[in-house]
Image (cartoon, rainbow, N blue to C red; front, side):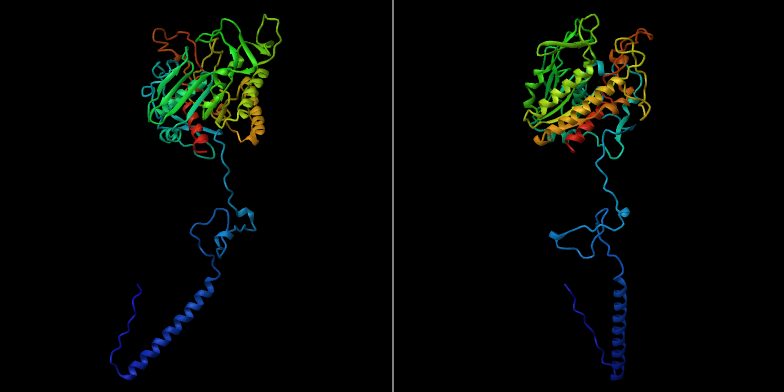
Length: 433
């Protein structure tokens, strides 16, 4: 409410009243001159806006909402560029004092050969690093948000034992909110399915190391009684028959293509990879892998199924002074820095095949609106030689003999460990977009 101004006049003499009136008129005149002077100078000052657009100037007079436009300064060097979306796969491992969000004791799905702390690994520094993209922040995995958004949905991780390693990491992270119930496993316990009752969320791992139809004769320690029979023109129905039931899929191939195998097409022997003593043509693992990746991605883009598919790139190992079967070890306890290590030739070949065929699939599937994403974990994993079980794939391997010669695992990952960051990437790609 505006208050009414009141002037109280005292019964003075007429002279005094006239004098007061003159002083009042002069005051009004001076105030008018001062206002005119101030206003004329204020026209040369840029108006201050409360929330200006970054990199643009604001017009002095705002147009109507339907006619809003942005004025670009003549000097473009003054424009602040909008930061492009960063590459979350380019970055560094930085110290993280907070450590992992779960422990080997709090998670009950960690398999024995990845339970490094229980198996007696003496150092724990490998637990205190996190992946940090160079041009943006990568939030930690949010289990509650993930489960809420995945209510009534299903995920599948399809591939070899690295995929199983990956899904166990995810199960451990999610267990901070709700423990999963195992509802299925195959005879060898390689394929499994879990259910989160409160969210009706299903998570599966499907063991299909070649992603192709293959006859494999290998024991749990990786030793084969005879050569693998691999059909390069037929996908493994173990996963293709279930594909339509999944909302999200993480699929990958890789290291198994380095094993000795006999290759078939149209049920006829095409050649082999590393089969000395057999009168067969060396077809090359790279040619076989390209055929496999091409067949897998073509199936995905022509399936008319609206799942979100993350194609994960190959995982490098860190064996030194030998391979897994010939005494190779991995003794480093800190990450590499960028430039301190390069991909092995074999890993570089496989990665290039993946990138080329992925790009071809994206181009071919663009008109079909296929939701296909590249989960490029290769180079960030290359920098973590410290995250493998090494000799601690076995329970206290040196308890009886400190100089015992034991088989090392320099391919899979300790849990907790660097592979947990893969799920931070998955969260960013799928949930945060």
